[in-house]
Image (tube, rainbow, N blue to C red; front, top):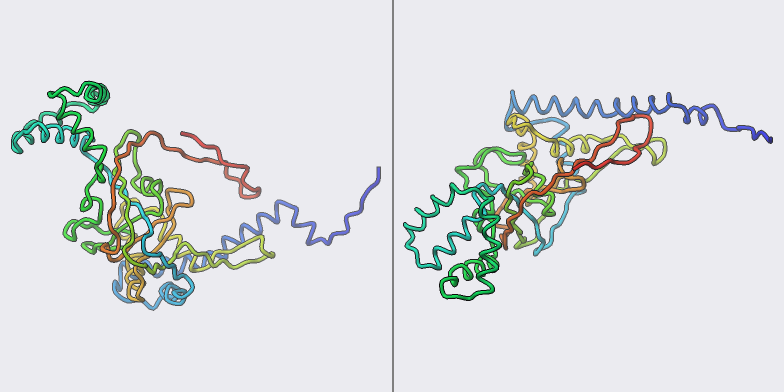
Length: 332
């Protein structure tokens, strides 16, 4: 058997060892440490010392990258917004039926109060039969039922109406990732799935998903961009300060209002630069992108659909810092 000599240098041979992988991992962690420290110092100062101004390198990085991250959304672009739909989805069908049966408005509300005590399971079994009967037997007594179904099918807003699908009124707005209390911004997603994931829904829950369309061109500050530092050729990347900031805009928050203050401050500075909103990655949907529009009137609600969550998929994979990922196992 022919033995082929290994003429590689010691450095090249070392790269095949697990120790080399550990050294690279340590380097990556160390390279991000200064960025994380800058963020923590900036956050602490904004939350506990000086709420309205900062000389931090974090703010300087946001200002310096403004020209590089400009993202233009053309007029007519579609976005999506989801809201939890707490009432029974059958309520509007019953309301339509009572309306078409010439029921007075005050009596309609009384009857609806009685229907609200009936489980949805009953209506889920009843309504398909009512639908079939009203279609197949156009009797006079069934006209209100048939009309109610037709009106439902033709509605543009099957979930919340246009006002209910948009941003709440200023008085009822709570602090969010981009907005302080009472500041009215419109939170959207670039696809309907991401909008639903952002609701953190449970199986069986009803969600109203509205479709919005931009009424003008929008200039967004794109926080999905990456500016990594490369080493060892193109194979390895170390996160930059901008990458660190971007990650914190997407980071989940367990309802701690203090964690929103730093991103609210940076969002206001971005707004002062003349941007119409921000664009950032979703922490709940892989490859999902969220958008915040500073002027809600820049987007028009076109329709809403009522959906029910059937299943929620989670991808899992073993953690191994020394070897590439072997794939993701999906569980439902």
